[in-house]
Length: 286
Image 1 (cartoon, rainbow, N blue to C red):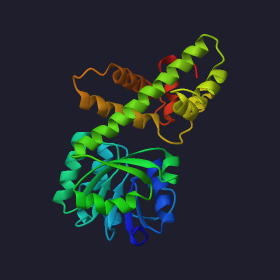
Image 2 (cartoon, one colour):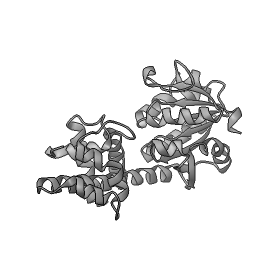
Image 3 (cartoon, rainbow, N blue to C red):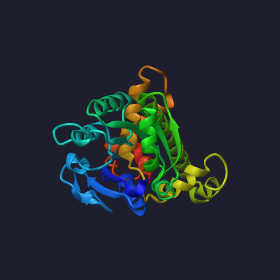
Image 4 (spheres, rainbow, N blue to C red):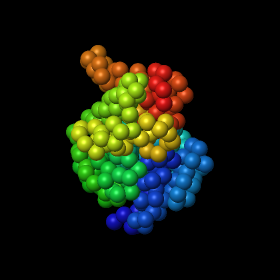
């Protein structure tokens, strides 16, 4: 089914560009749009506006930074929704629940078939079709979106509302950020105490609860090499801000402390680096 699909892919971050390669390998015809054209990497014909990219596509799929970027590519006179009547519209960006609900409503009003499908996983997850998708939408629309999602997604979890799916994605990222910050603090403390952090990391990366995050990001934290490869620090900082908006007055001290640390790292000019650079916040030595 995917072989005959034409997909308008909106965005040109790590996920969008990696997904483009995966879709191309499955014979999907790609229309590409991104506000900064030079960021588009990989296959597909590039268009000057989201509406032009969406025209004649059967599926429009968005991977953009935040609510504002999503609003830009979908709405307005040049937005994809102006050319999306009858089209399956998939939004896989990590958004605030309130805006995600509004996006779904707007897409329905435009005659599209909206499916919110926030995904979690890295570049390797896309390449190995191992992502997890938190989805919401009408059952028929989700069924229509599933074949193209399955190109990169291994597991699909459906929720009763778009707001729920968006909230779960935020909590998923908040959990990852808390764990990552714990590793950063532990490594920085070990270093300040004169311990052999490389030796410790060798153990933590192989054994125990810390193994996945230590093996994935520990070396970067020890060496100070935070070149962007999967997810920027600024993206996680944005996700944490959205999470705190959702929790409101509810007590979430660990998430709150983690959010402050990520914001400090962004303020320090580290936002464009890999999220492992959080170790450099608050005067850390790496």
